[in-house]
Structure formats: C-alpha cells, structure tokens
View: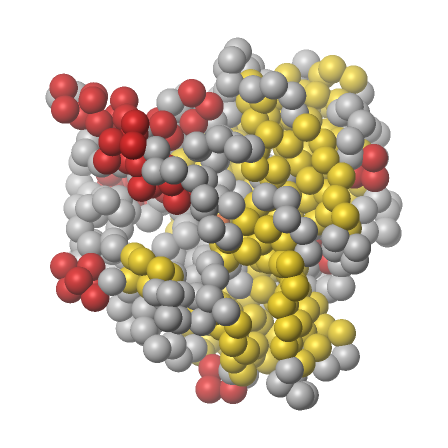
Length: 471
Ligand SMILES: [Fe+2]
C-alpha cells in the first residue's frame, strides 16, 4: 500500500472502529448466552453490509465494500453464527484482478452488461422462493444465497427472463410470495418494475416513465398497488456526460409518488406531487378505502457542520449522517386529494415492520435511533405506534451501536407486535459484538437474552428475519 493510500484510508472513518471490515469467514455453534433465549423463538436473523476484502486503493465510499452477510441462527434455545462474503460475479472477477469496474468515486464502466460500477450486492437481503436474495442499492443482478449455509448459489436472472437488474428494497408480498421489484439506471430506460412469483417466474414487467434519470432508494407495496418514488435528487448533466457518479438536490423539483396497479402497464401510473424531499426508506404502506397511506422516514435538513477533518471524505460523511423523521402521506385514488403529515420529530432511520404486515395496515414499526454523531450510528431502537405517533426507546448503552433490527413474531402469534426485536450490537470500546433479543411489547426493558459473538460484526446496512421452517 502506498503512503498516499494509507493516508487516504486513515481519513475514511468508515474503514475504522465499529465500521472496520472483517475478512475471516467463520461458523460457530453453541454460542454463550446471557439470559435465556425464549422457547417460542426460532429462525435466522441476517444482516448485509460492506466488508472490503482488499485494502481500498484510491477513494473508497462506504457503499462500495464487498457484501458480507452475518447471520445468527436460533433453534431449541441455542444460537449459532456464521458470516460469508457475497460472491457476486464482480467479486469473483475482482479476486482474480480481472475486474474493470470499481466504486462510485470512480468512472462508470460499461462492458456490455448494464452494470456500470462493481456489483457488491452489499445493501439489502430478502427471502424469496426459499432462498436469500442479496440486493444492491445501485441496482444489479440479484445474488442468491443458501439461507442455511450462506454460500453463494449464484446470480439470478429469473430463468433468463430478467431484462436488466433488481434494486435493493424490492419487496416480497408475504401472502402471495411474489417479489415486486424495481430497477433504475443512469441511462434509459431509467425506471422499470416487475413481478416474480414464488416459483421464481417473471410474471410482469413494465417501464415507468420519468423526466430523467433519478435516484430512488426504496419502493412500497399495498394489497393492489406498487408505489414508486420520483425524488429531487438527480444525476448532474456533467456527471452523466463524463460517466461519473455526481448527484445533487434540485430544489426546483417536487417529490412525487407514483401508484400503479401491480399488474398494469407503467402507462397507467398515477402520480401525486408533494414538496421536495429525499427519502431513503419506506416504513410501510396500505390501502384504506380510496386512500393509499404511505409512511416513510423523510430526510430533513442535515444541520451538521461539514466535518472537514475527514478531508476528501467530508462530503460523504456529511451525507451519511442521516437525519430523518417519521412522515405520513395520504393519497386519494378517487378524488386525487393528498396530504402530508410529520408524525414525530425524533431522528430515526432503517425502519422495519412485522414482515407479515408489509403492504397491509400496520401499527408498529422499529427504527434505528440515530445518535448525534458525525458518522452513522444507531444508539438504540425506537418502537413507533404509528396510530398515535408515540414511541418508546431501548437504548443500547454507552458506546454500543446497533444494526437495522428485525421483528421476530413469537411462534404461534397472531397479533402484530407479539414477538421479539433482534439486533446485532457492537461495543466501540471493547470491539465485542453480540445479538440482543428484546421483548417487542416491552421494548425499554433490559434484553431477554444477549448472545455473545466470538468476533466483531461491523456496522452495516439492511437485514431480515426468516423462520427457516417456513422458508
Ligand atoms: Fe437502504
């Protein structure tokens, strides 16, 4: 490593401390547990995130690290852990030093496929058709993983039927087992939507017209509709010409939500317009009569000073601080009326719900509580009652930071919040990680159990829960 590289990496906070990558892949059974794992608790908690396998050379964005899944499996009151790299085609090519594409601080490279940057599949995880699917925020080929071993099965193109890519935060309907996915790109077609059934067969595909290339991060589903976002964060003309990742917020543009019947042509989309804002993550959406209700974490003004001590990484650090508040949008499909309401002013992000209620009317959501620090750190979990806007908080304690949580329904439960909330946590002082099991109905109380991990789990992106007996 050159001196300049070493200096550059030293300035990047997302390569150090609780973010520092781990490179060892391990499988460990019979983990030590403080407290007792509930008897009506079984399945697996997975979390994706960036773990650059090679020491970064040149500018390195936190979003660019090779995908790695960390998972903890619970059965009969015992817990086991394993972690594996996501071996996308680009990961394998990079191992052989044959990859021409790189991360978003570098020029986009097209080699005939539609991928312009290295597909790390490091962003999101969903369970569909009996396997895990690792997804990437820029939209790439989805990577299938064995849900029990985490070994990479391979990239999936839905038996040759996938026209291009699948974005992170595509959604699975827990009732039908369908995957509703979106794809977006810097170059036309800018936005597409598809439905893949529970047998992994593509059933529907259509294009969504937009005024230009956009940067949507999430979508929502309801019983009858898919909801898409046209947000005022856009690629710059110069960036597109020079094939570099350059985005900016256009204050003249609105935020629009497009509502489309699940199996309709994109031409049938109905757009609702609101004042401009950026949104990373949807909480949930559903229908109430003629109205479509959408809850998201809405980004508000950052308000933080540019952290110049990070040198060339200051803008990245500033953007990743994530300042968002729970917000509700209501859109009437009959009258066209709409309204927006801020539900609370607490800062939170990475919201999850009981996955059985995704796309259905729900009351509770669980969010990473964002600490007032320069880098992105969750110092607790907030449980929201969306019907009242009230929340309760479980704080992790001094210098302990968490991951996106998952809600785990108690075996045999039928009520929405009858279950547990799990999260990986890492102590930034001791470098030790564990998994907390919290009582979802009494979130503020101490954990029911803490599973001690033998190795650190770096802070990362999204996770999911699967009851493997039902997978
Ligand atoms: Fe995300």
